[in-house]
Length: 248
Image (cartoon, rainbow, N blue to C red; front, side):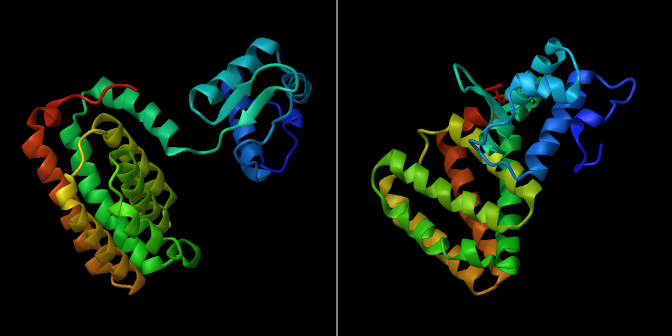
């Protein structure tokens, strides 16, 4: 189906499951119309007319999108399907089902982060997105906060920004999602307060390398920063590494 054509005018290919074909069409609509989080989609009744399918198939299509976190179904008068947007938490939740099924361990998750995060820092230094660059100083420095929850949130913001600055949608989504999965499991495992100045310095050094357009330096500093945290987790929580990632 062409992104610009009316979905109701397009016959679905034989052999395609109707609900899946409709779900794909709705995703095209969201993308081509630029619908962001919170945008209301046409009502179920409207889409039944557009697509010319049965109510059961339409509800299954909406359920597919809801389960995968791309929409939510708002109840009550004026409700209906609402765009959720692409969120790493939803992508990560779906990925954990596969991780658990194949027996993926947190050791493998850490190894993936240790590879991806330095690469994204390198790309951030090469591409230097001007709008995202403005946010770097703030996210790098607020790792100084003392409260554990606020500290975790601030360090997470820094790493999420670096992922976004990579300019690669796949790395950004996958990198953020595995970071979410890891942090969800180890939310109580943070560097002691005595080492938080060290973390802030690492963030500031990475920021400086990115701002100065030094890809190799940004890569190496991020690798060193992540490797220190991995070593800390291994020392304090060795059994965690062999634990299989659970479906969240």
